[in-house]
Image 1 (cartoon, one colour):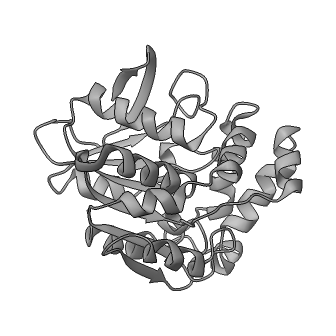
Image 2 (image 1 turned 90 degrees about the vertical axis):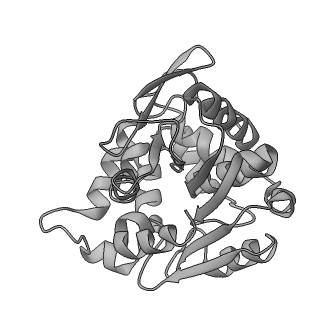
Length: 262
């Protein structure tokens, strides 16, 4: 599905079903340097079970035009304008990693427009190692390698894909390699600079679930638990044997966690 936001073409996958603004909607937001394709299973399930789905490409990512946005706050405000462009009055938000920060910040500002919130691979702070930032700024492939390696748990390094013949880490590398020069660095810098998560968490009043992998090296589960503790009524699901990319490493378990809140 193509939308226009701020005068730019924006792409959002609808899970293989026609979009109908009358139905309850769920917006899926990807992480740094990635695009809508990281949400392979979960949006399709919801789309085929009575929900609208918009798995978006943020500006300058995937199939969306426009310059990438430079801060989490700007991305969150853009998400509100996306809902308006789609004619969606209320929606649930599901965000992964950087997208979790974006969804959290959006929920804090949009208030009653967000009916539920799922934060995957989330933490109150997401500092980025200086060597990774430097590699990304120089557009070195090392940045892709580091994000891919740190983003997957032990099973993902060994294989681990539910579908025979598919390679988890190779697939993640291809997604990152497709991003335009500077996109990954801008996203990582936005995560590194964002300091508003705890303040945003205190403003969230809708049902919320944090989804954490017990082998996540990028946003450890204990950090997710700290964030959950700052959101009134939030619950946390810990997925065994998963790293940071839980929706790909453990798709069924992640779907079960999302179904509980979305």
